Image (cartoon, rainbow, N blue to C red; front, side, top):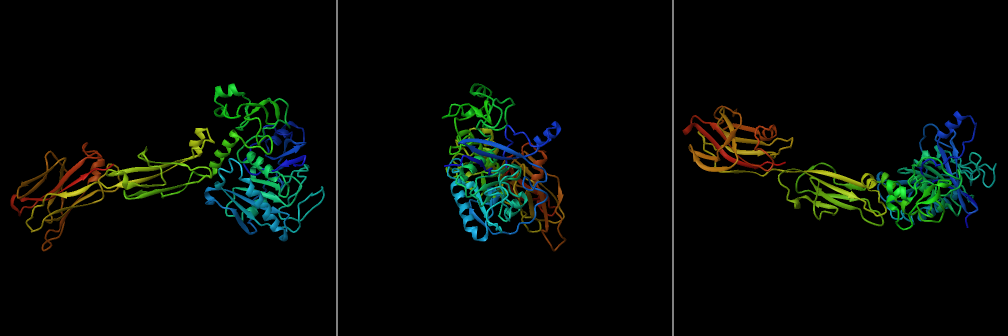
Length: 566
């Protein structure tokens, strides 16, 4: 059985301020009271004759047991053991356990306390569904004395590594810790998202430090697990208490920010599409009066849940908030092919995170359009038969779990997209025959790069084996031809366009046929001087130059054809 009066440990960092704050301790001067009200709080809950109640402690600036003071020092390099490993710390929620009041000979007990907590913490939804999103690390901190201060009674002092003790700020079951020391020791772990300090004590107690990602727990107490789960709802999922003790009988404030309590009954909640309106009528979800420490004026989603009583499930609305907050730390994609420009024979890969209960949805897209049937973890780009040009291939990974109905949150937190550029070279080939020139060489076309309407790389169309020091140009059209012309072959059908003339350069004899030409056709495509030069168009070109020593004084290369890509 649970003890009749037990405060609850806060298990992590991001808990909102309670809806109704206890009157701050200290002077009654209104200005000073307002200053107190703006200070952060430590949170605790407790059971009194089976009824869940709660309270807060105002943080006194500069108190090492209530907040971090100054800069953190280096960790003492206490041994660290990963007791739950589910993936890279950069994409997991890493919880670090540190112990206080455990001597060297007590470390086996400490390890047992840690293992018991972790083994049972992930046994109910949604933690059971998403256990793979967590890593847990144990840091073996050694104390001189066994136990912590003020245990079993006030005035008993112990020499411990983290200065943990009961009667924090005059509250017997509030179990505080030296914040700097706890966080510093946690630095021995590979990664720290949240810290949980375990006291070697069976006297129930605990405190949550929302501003410091820190919570405390009396690890040898039998109610430790349920307390930790309840407080994790506060601190991690930003859930309010759903019990109705500790505040004014009738709530008179505005709409709370927490997602699981509201001033709205079912009808106005549904009509205004507020809070948990998507869940109304699902199972036992409605609006039940009595929540946020008040009996009247505030509503909760279900008759009972773990945020109202221990030993209960979290229930639908609270579970949804947990899942959304999981994805505030964990991205849907663990790994994928690095972003970049790839050729069309590439196989792209994606590795989503893997919840225990289901797989994430995967959809590959081409230029923003879903590729039918492409829902696997790899995509063979060659199978798409992409046309020449630059294409955007992306993958969308989404957690479509029915535990979440807030589609805006799903889109913001539970979805991720990766994108790659696939560069498919334009189809380029040569055709028809070049003309023997007066120096006994046949000028020939060559190229580098790919024709494209958007690529910043050049598409260089060249002509080699040209008579030196002769002017020439590239002319082109939109259809091929293969007909005799002045001792050679004309390869392009009229109408034709031509580029500006250029000199062939080269060297004097005996370096015959040492001239050449080069033209960046992509520069012409992207300059917009010819409206026919668009993606998908097929172009036919040929080099012409003056060869006064030849019959007809004309030199002609073979032809080149290419398809302009995106």
